[in-house]
Amino acid sequence: MQTNFSPDQLADVHIAEADKILKSCQHYGFCTSGCPTYVLLHDENDSPRGRIDLIKEMLESGPAPRAQTVAHLDRCLSCMSCMTTCAVQVDYMHLIDTARVHIEKTYSRPLPDRLLRELLAFVLPRPRLFAAMLALGRLGRPLKPLLPAGLRRLVDFIPPPAAARRPALTIYPAAGPRRWRVALLAGCVQPVIAPHINDATLRLLTRFGCEVVVPESAGCCGSLNLHMGKAEAARASARRNVLAWLAEMQGEGLDAIIVNASGCGTTVKDYGHLFLDNEAERLDAEKIAALCHDICEWLTAMALPEPAEPRRLRVTYHDACSLRNAQKVTAEPRALLRHAGFIVSDVPESHFCCGSAGTYNLLQADIARQLGERKASHIAGTRPQIIAAGNIGCLTQIARYSAAPIVHTVELLDWAHGGETPPALRDLVLQAHPPGIESPIADAAGSSQPIRIHPRGTATDAAGQAIW
Image 1 (cartoon, rainbow, N blue to C red):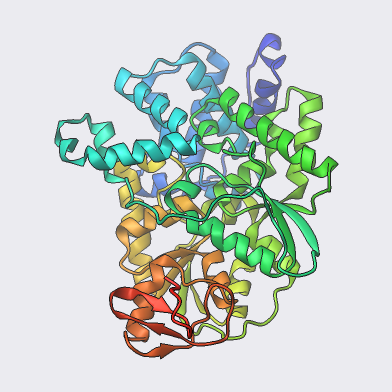
Image 2: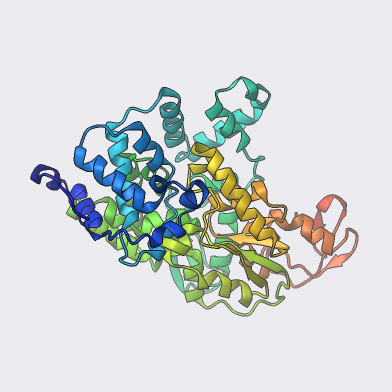
C-alpha cells in the first residue's frame, strides 16, 4: 500500500509506526474470512482490509474523521482474528489503537455517546466506585424504562451481588516451602463481579509453592481506556502498575507477574508499546512485560502434580480472543484441564469472538448480541456440563446466552486440586450428589475426608463445620 504522510506527520512516532504498518498491507483479503463483523454485516468497510483503507485516509487527512468512518472503526472488536490469517502479518492491533486515539482527539461524538464512554472510562477502572455504582444500579432497576438507551443497556448487564470475600492481603505466603515469588494483578472489574476467581488463583498458587504479592498500588491494567482511544488514561494505569511491580522486583524479587484475565494480560505484555515515545519508561515497561504470564502459562511451568481425585466432567473450553489471537496461549489451558481429569471439547468456529471485547457489548449491543448467540449455539452443540474460559469478559458475555454453567479455567483447576467448588457449579454438584448423602468432594483446605451435602445447597465437613 502507498502512503502520503507529510514529514511533519512522520515526526510523530505513532504516525511513523502506522505508516510502516499500512505499507505492509498487501490487500490479499485472507483477513476477511476470519473477521466477525465482516461475516455478519457483509460490508467491506467492516472488514480489516476495508478498515485499513479508512485508517489510512483518516490519518493522512489529519482533521476530524467522517462520522461514517468512525462508525466502521467503532464496530471493530479488536479480536485480532485477522492477524492469525494475514499472509504478511500486518500489525493491525497497533494500527487500530492508533486510529482510536486519533478519533478520541479529533472527533466530537454525539453527546449521549460521549457521556456513556466517559462514564465507562471513569467508573470501570475504579473497583470501589464500580461496586458502589452496581449497588446503586440494582436499587434503580425499577426506573430502567425511564433511562436513556445507553444506560438501559448498562442496567441489563448488572450482575447479582458477589458473595462476600475474605479480607484482602498484600502478601499470601506459600503453603509449604517457597519455590517462587510472584505478583498477581488484582484487576478492576473482575474482583468486583467475580472475586472468587482471584481467590481460586491465590489458593492454587500458594498451595504449590508460590508466595503471591498483590501490591495495593497496582490496579487496572489500562486496556479498557486504551481500546476507547484514551491513551493517556491507559498510560497512567500502566505507569502505576510498572512502578508497583518494579518496587517488588528491586525488593525480594519476582519470578513472574501473573494475570488471570486474558484481556489484561495482552495489554500488560504489550506495556512497552504504550511508552513508544519515552525511552526510559519504555525500558521499564518492557522489563515488566517480559515477566508477565497468563495464569495457565505459569501453572504449566509449575508442573502441577496429578490431582488426588480427577474430575471426570465434560468441559467445553472457549478460547478468549486475547489468549488465542494475541498471546497464542491455546494448548496450555486444555492440557491443564485434561491433566486434572476433565474431558475437554473445543468450540466449533473457535476463532470467532463471543462479542464481549472489553466494553464492546455495552457500546455495540446489537452486534455483540448476535455474536453471543452464535457462540452459545456452537457451545450447545458440544453438550457440555461445564464451559471454561480465561477472561472475565467472555465469562459474563457467554453466561447471558448459554444454559450450561461457565467458570474460569483456574476455578476448575483449583477445585480439582482440593479447592472450593466454584460457585457456578454448586447446582451441578447437587445434581450429582443429592442432599443428605456424603460426597467425596474435598473441602477448601484440601481435606480428603468426605463432605455432606445438605438441602438448599449447603455443605459441611465430617466435623459438621460449614464449607459453603
